[in-house]
Amino acid sequence: MTEETAEVSMRRLEQVGCQQRLPETDEEAAKIEELLAEELSNLSMSEQDVVSFDVHGIVADVEETSELIAQSLIEMEAELQKIQKKPAYEKALKMNPSYVTGQSFRLQFLRCESFNCKNAARRLVLHFQQKKQLFGSGDVLARDVRLSDMDAGDLEDMKKGAIQLLPTCDVSGRAVWCFFLRKWAKKPKAKTAQRVLYYMAQATMQYESMQRKGIVAIFYYLGNNYESTFGFNIMKSVFQTRLCVPHRLEAMHLCYNSKALRPVLSGLRFFMDRRGRTRSRVHFGNEQHILFKLQTYGIPVPDDSPLRQVNGTFSLASHRQWLQNRQAQEMKVAGTDEMLKTFFPHRFDVLFGRSTKVRSHTGNLRALHLVNLWQARYDGAPNRARKAEISERIV
Image 1 (cartoon, rainbow, N blue to C red):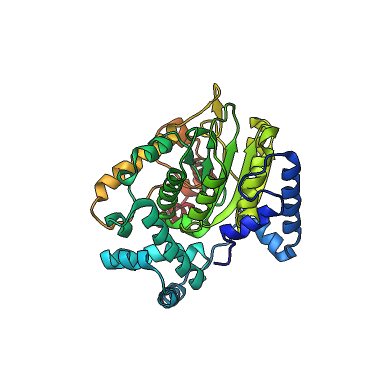
Image 2 (tube, rainbow, N blue to C red; image 1 turned 90 degrees about the vertical axis):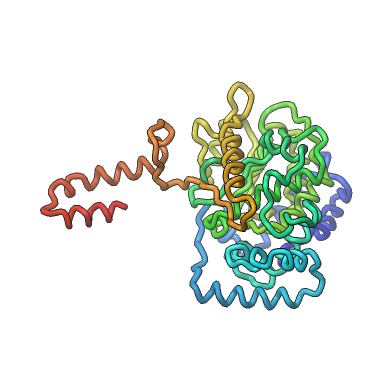
């Protein structure tokens, strides 16, 4: 892959004396922040523009022609044939060839790597290798992972909302993951963290627009009583899993309200690959200040957002509903190779329903505004054909 491996990040950590641990002092954090600033300043002007656009949600989709897709799939297969050692991939291929060679499945990896066929092939092989390590070599290896494949510890941390998918996308239609690290168990297991991340990534990336637009990650350290010991080894394991799942990180926001967390967050940024480091932004302050900053980057935070605390706690309502929807969908398609799809309302989508939340959705308000703009012309239209034309124009 073009991105750095965990070993490269380890060598970078050695420069500040943090080979087997996260930074612990402000001095170590300052050294890391200096290296991060240097790395960003060394980017070319065009690279800096791309990073800035990505972070602020100014996204230009790759034009996916039928010719590009067909040719990329052929080239990806050729690259797969060049990889000599791929036992997990080969076993999955033998178990369920229609799943492993399926166009919709392979497109996830091509889109993740911006149609770099060599990188997509490598990530696909690593994907099955990681999947075998996390979930075993049974039938799960050659199908989508389900909630029923998770063990009790996985489900417990998942229900706590340690990783949540925000109910609405950002301004450009990208999925927003939020890591509430204070919700992990006091001594979380690396494998649990990896399995939860793997499942969440799989569930998100089965939605085509998320594959094409990428994802935004928020590490949310607001609140009190940080009991979790989300340490070096777990962070290293999660980093390795991230390089195996087909998602493209477009922006990362690290939010905190305690100066004591500065070294930990510096280490987290430093341990990321180059793409993650250059696209990370740090926000320090109270909840009101941080939520305002997130909105400036195109991340919606309505009154019922999981990012807002109510009486000192974060709401799990949307996360629980998401889990219920996932479980219901998986029960319907269990035993088939059909891809699960979860609906993520975009900013300008029009939602059906009578609730206040539906009526106040941005897309609904925009649709109502368009109808009002064209109302007079519609009423004055001379015939049905003209009225139909106006209706189609609004849609």
